[in-house]
Length: 149
Length: 75
Image (cartoon, rainbow over all chains, first blue to last red; front, side, top):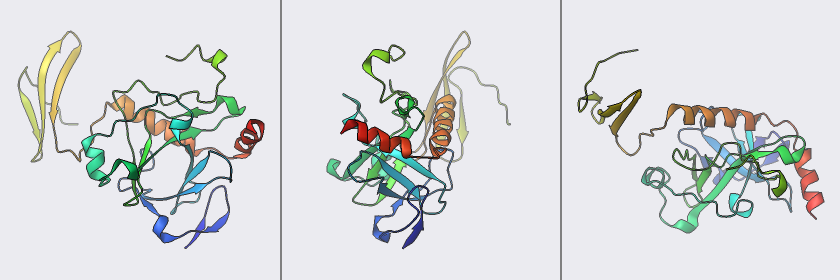
């Protein structure tokens, strides 16, 4: 299918790669269908692009590559909602709020995006009782992290 | 908004399968127990609002050129 994207213009995507977010995501409750697109080859960034609204797209990364010790515990409700059967089917991403300069970019570690690659289902998991923040300065040099917990 | 008065250990039934129970009251803090089906998501309001706000901010990214710069400097 043809898709108009926010960052990559018009592209062709396989319908089988469409991810269903049954309840949308907070603030975008009517966006229930997304595709995950690599932003540029050789970069860690991907785009979670709505298939319905070209302007709705999120830059995401694999948090485990950038946040040592980052942990996500999937509650039963998530495992049930996404019909997760095997841990290896699960992919975890976090959304970036991109800033200039780039080092001010933050990652929402409190609400990772969980995808069951086997069923093409996804949702944003809100981790209420987690130590993680919605604005984690993920690319800051260690010397400037005094504000972190 | 419907307003109901409840005492400790009293509860409120919402629909067929959601129960809110007042567990304890200490000063200005109320502990509420919630029984609901798994598919009903329950969040502290301020957490939910913070996530909504951050999602809106994340979606406002206009240019991703700055990301391409990051990759080049890493190489």
